[in-house]
Image (tube, rainbow, N blue to C red; front, side, top):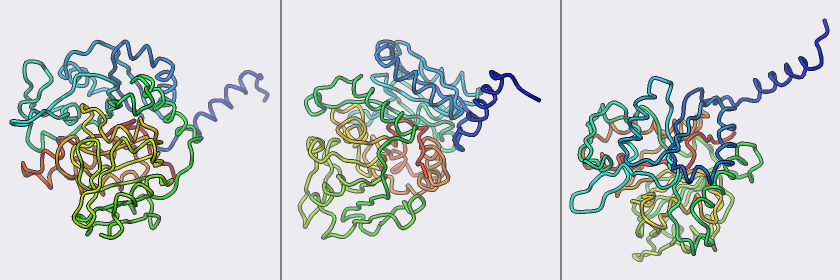
Length: 367
């Protein structure tokens, strides 16, 4: 039996699409929150992004509105929770679900958007969080990702916020197409107070291909600068912070500092990061460290860290799920569901309330 030429072409195309879809196809819905002005500036990049995600099985719902509160965004998510909702992405300057800290500043709390059944109490402004639910109601049903540059324009090449986001989406598209610069192996840099740790579970992704630096003589700021310039795929850094824009490394009783202002010279090359320092992913603060790995003169695509003081060092669950081919968003959610009951004490709970994923949550570590 002969098929008309057009029909043959259609069948070949369908066959190619069927077998070109990644094995990690999402097959779920994702809501993207953005303001109308930024949406217009990113219209081309978002169109490409949406097509890429549809090939992976995701339904993408872009909500370009003048958002006035976090409560508004939460109501959208609640309305979509029965539509196979997987997660949400916040792009640019949007209302921040913030946890008020007594006598101190407020910090972003992504879990507010991720938990769809807990009794959260918000202030009248619909954004400041006054009360958080206890476990198990306080666990996440979906994941959330944040794409928010907040960098010094002088250090970032005098580029505007939307230009930095455009560059980020270009990197994400290139990575999905398989044309991004190849990286290999992982680095685990663990400073003196945590020297008993080594890989923290990275072997689930990279086996023996993990370079560990956790000795007192080796874990110095000059050594870290040198390692950041190497072509690792994944880098985790466990140390003190030096403000939200700096890494503090202990060396013989002194604190050596790597600031974001050093990044243009270092040019960090890794694709994925776990930042084990207090508050360095607090995107409401200018020049926050996590943002520089995504939007500065770096190749970063994904950063996990915290907006709050405290170190989440039980991160092996993330690596286990990434090793199975799951997305960063799913691995992040799995870590919270596993670790939060283990550390239910209020002193540690705030660490999870501040845990955050910066970048596109639907990326995976390619094998």
